[in-house]
Length: 171
Image 1 (cartoon, rainbow, N blue to C red):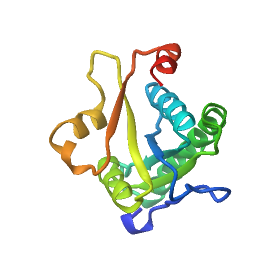
Image 2 (image 1 turned 90 degrees about the vertical axis):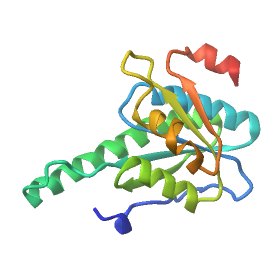
Image 3 (image 1 turned 30 degrees about the vertical axis):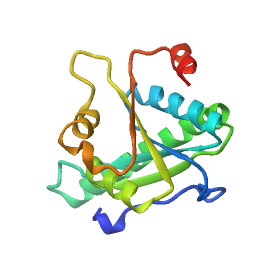
Image 4 (image 1 turned 90 degrees about the horizontal axis):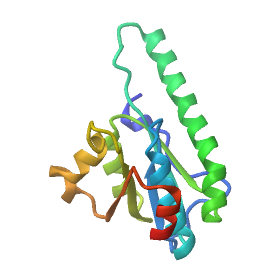
């Protein structure tokens, strides 16, 4: 999918209000994204803000046959929708508001930078660092290193080893 064909936007029932503080969370199949979501939900609830969930369908690395590539893209889209659906109820319960949804296709870092540049209502990016021995994760590494100055908004990084109770105490 070319970048100009990206699927983007908020849910149709109630998108972000221009005055609301929007906490953007990158959601994916990793365990740590739940920590970032919980932190963002609790902060949104306490500040009258809203949570926005962002998922990027990465390009397929197997591009030899168009039919196989199309099938892989469709499977990734279904995975994104399942993650949004599963997390939506938790976000609503924890934050008190329906989340906004952003779904794009492309490279995660590039699409994230574009979204933040385009959507001026996004106030804070909330990420969670992986707690394993492999490091904090590629997005945390990318945005914490040379790219740190590219974002026009603050980035909050939640340690992945925090319990729900510890996150609640911080927010």
